[in-house]
Length: 101
Image (cartoon, rainbow, N blue to C red; front, side, top):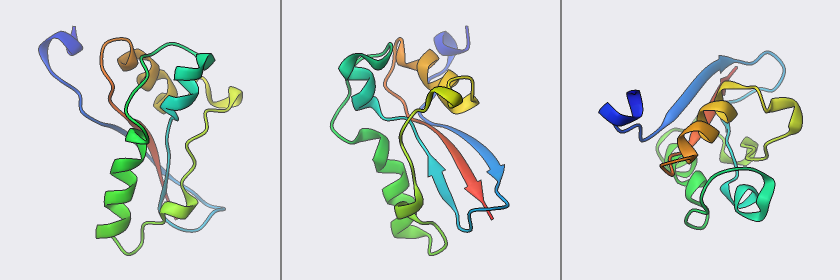
């Protein structure tokens, strides 16, 4: 119902991180989905990296180099992956987990 009433353009799950220092994102690689790793339409090249690149340009404490876009099997139940897969069914919107330390 939420998807029918409103358009979600971005999902960000915020977390604190105690081991890895910096501010960075875990994303979901749409190219892996397009190769058959799961549901969802193929999207534009590198579309999931636009938001992190913009953050890196505008925010000194954000590290694009520390971002990771792989979807590991152990993270299949994480909010970023579940929401991303759900919204991929109809739309091509990115989903991230932002880590702070």
